[in-house]
Image 1 (spheres, rainbow, N blue to C red):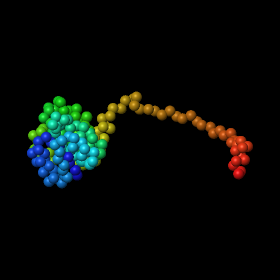
Image 2 (cartoon, one colour; image 1 turned 90 degrees about the vertical axis):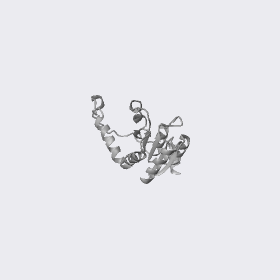
Image 3 (cartoon, one colour; image 1 turned 30 degrees about the vertical axis):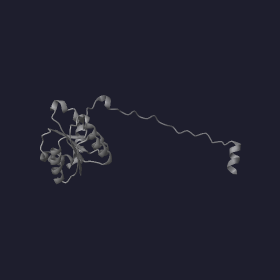
Image 4 (cartoon, rainbow, N blue to C red; image 1 turned 120 degrees about the vertical axis):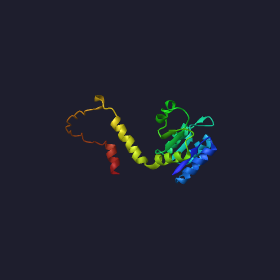
Length: 171
């Protein structure tokens, strides 16, 4: 499993990387969104742990780019914004697994990461089942097929070749 850590605080990034390495992840740490974007184009990651902003740049696009290479990607975003301001991120970033505070301990981030990549197939099945159960069914959505009209076979007219084509076929 590969993890990308994108944090503004190098000490927090190092602590998170140590915990992730202990959990069996191959870890790459970045402090630059530009380098992270380039790295995502070259490699596939299973999880991304990142601050919501690094050097004033939003990091949402990094998660969206990584989703193209790995549809089962899990993203953990660290932010200090209140829940009211961040609820829409779950809709905007489909891979978003958790939003936590920037002071969250590295040990807790490691446990979240293991849970996020632990059983993605079961999680995807649960989400699909919930979407199917929650989908509204309206009368307009139900289509009753009309019976097809009966078809009577008809004889096709005979194929007649022109004399020039018939002569060409005999040669």
